[in-house]
Image 1 (tube, rainbow, N blue to C red):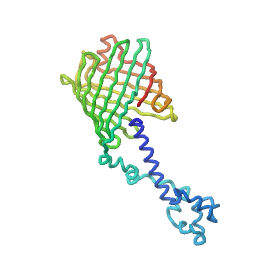
Image 2: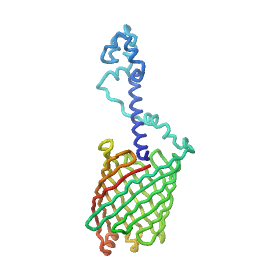
Image 3: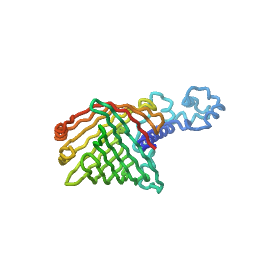
Length: 313
C-alpha cells in the first residue's frame, strides 16, 4: 500500500473511530452484541426506539435509563452529533501521537511509478517518467526519486535523487541528500534539503531546495491531489514548478521562475497496484528560460495529450 493510501486510510479510520466513540457514549447499549437477545426477553422490545423505555419508570427494568442525559440526546433525532474535539482526535491517534516512541526495527520497501507515459504531437513523439521509492521503518527511510523526459529520440531532462528522510510528524517528512542531473547539457550534481508530506485537504506536497556547482541554486516544487470519482476512477490534478537562482545558458535555464507544468490525468485502477490513464498536460517557460528556448528554435509553451500507466509494488 502506498504512503498516500496509508495516510488516507489512517485518517478515515481515525474519524470513524471518533464518531463511533461519541455515538456509544450517547447510547451505551448501541454496541452490545447481546442487546438484541435481551430485547427479545423484554416486554417493551416492540417499541420503536430504545429511548421510549424512559417513559415507563419503575415498571421497566430499563427505566433508570430514561432520565440519563445521554439517552435523552440519543432519542432526540434533532440533536446533532457533537463536533469532534482535540481530545477525540488525540484518542483516535494513540500511535501517531506518540510515533517517535514507537519506532520499531521492522523495515519495509515501496516503489511507485507515478508516471510512465507517451504522447504524439505535430512536433514529434515523446516519453516521460516519474518514480519514487523508499526503504526503512516508520521514522527513518532511504528515498529514491527520479524523473525525466525524452522528445524526438533525445533525452531532454533526466535526474536521480538519493535522500535520507525522517518523519517529524504523522504526515510530514524532512529529506536531505544528493541529486545527479544527466541532462540537459553536461551532467551536474546537487546537494539539497526539503520537505514532503500530506497538507490539509489531502494535498500531496513536495518542495526541495538544491545547491549545485558554481554557486547555482534551484527550488523544485510539486503539488498533486487525488479526487475519487468512484472506487476505481480517480482524477489527479498535478502542478510542478522550478525556480533557479542563477542563469545557466548552457543548459537552457534562466534565473527566477524557469518552468511550470500543470497536468490533469484520469486513471482507472484495474487493481490497486496497476492503473492506465489518459491526461492533458500544459508546460510553459518563463522569463530568461523562455527567451533561451525561442533562441534555440523551441516554443515557450506546449500542450499535449498523454497516455500511460501508473503502478506500484
